[in-house]
Length: 291
Length: 341
Image (cartoon, rainbow over all chains, first blue to last red):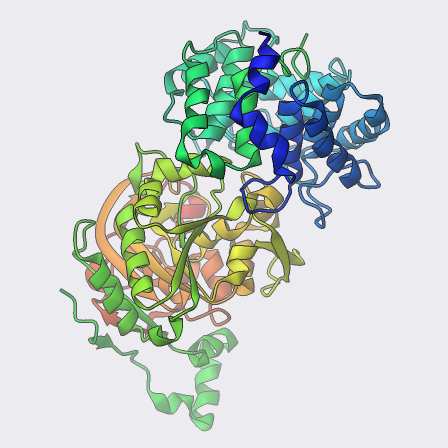
């Protein structure tokens, strides 16, 4: 059996393929991020099911090329990155125009920079991407934008290369990252699992001579366990796998979630991430990561 | 056990409120002082000697009775309990609202016949399940079969800015916040390395959805932290406060500070009055705290003579917290010892 045929038989796929709307929570409305991750997770497992969220995202694309977090609220649109990543990963020509418009919008967005005497250890002059236009850059939106640019063939652009530099800069000296601060008012902050997993996904293939990358991998190895909630578990497994350090029991941890009573109440977002965590190399290993 | 019926009435001559006397008095106080004075009196209940294994249900119920919250009207209504879960880790329980306080508050409001929802939008972590686990609030929600509203990821609706201290035209609030008949801010009492203190009002940053405002909610920082605290509170439906002041955070709050045992539960129907009193207790002058200066007279009184105290006096509970040695925080300290207001 192929990896794809094995995966396609899983409850996660069955759940995602039938749900029909893509929210963070079972009873909640559709948001762009869950739709994008659902598309990514289903791409080569159920083409028909993947088509629905891809087309939803295309339909949600606004006149300026952005895809807002939720329909009806034009800003913020940090989810444009995830839409571009999903469309580009699909390889379908019908999304070519949407990708180009989305990338153009992404390249027009910059995080605000801070010069001079500023109490934080990170390099606040690096531009990156903010959550909301007019604010500072943070780890996760920058990572999403970097992955999108790479998937769209712009991985060598100056913005993409600076994004790599920014993500490495936001890693804590002892490994891991949080939302994107390192030190504030003289105090070093704590790492968090989800942004560390995402940062390691985005930095896969980037120069591993930076000791903070190895320390971040070790941080995740030390903190990743089946006790983690699904979102953090999934990002941790994606990051570790794409860094070549997938835990031996990772498959069992994901499978265990499918047996839990609360599986039916997971919602699309968490289910899609768990499915990606089941075999990240499949859809993500060649797309969005540095080749 | 504190006597909820005991009161510490403000020491003001009511004659000063009469038209003739008022004009002269207003000249002495200035316009802001008069406005604060003539605003509705706010009641506040303080209970010392509390611990997490004690009868917090009784303490909270006594407190709500002492501040004369009309609990009969809560039957059949929706009460949103909003604990603080900004960036939890089990290694730092003094950072977040203790599970015992949440559990007790839920029991109290359910006892009034309300439908209780727990809601929070952690500001620094996107994985709300991870935050619930770190704060141990997942155990309470599971054990008590409470409904949890993930305020970071709900449908939102727009409300115009009711404060206008910032340039923000309004806020996108989560549907659970707008659907609540009563919001109960359940903060952990902590120092805050930007605004001095975080209690009932700053805790309500957590009703602002991360999916719209980011992690952190940087839009609010750019708009001005004191100003956005004021505006959020001015724009929300009705809110009261129950403060977890048992094991608090001092030093580099609200994340990296050290534990401070205070043993206090505070209950109040006016968040500004509650926060001002908490500021006094931890050794700050509320009139120097920027968001409280903004709130004075507009959202509620901050001068203790306009705050009707029940239970124990704030003076008896005062225990100055360690503050970070940065000028913008040091200048918030109360001068002259425990009785300075």
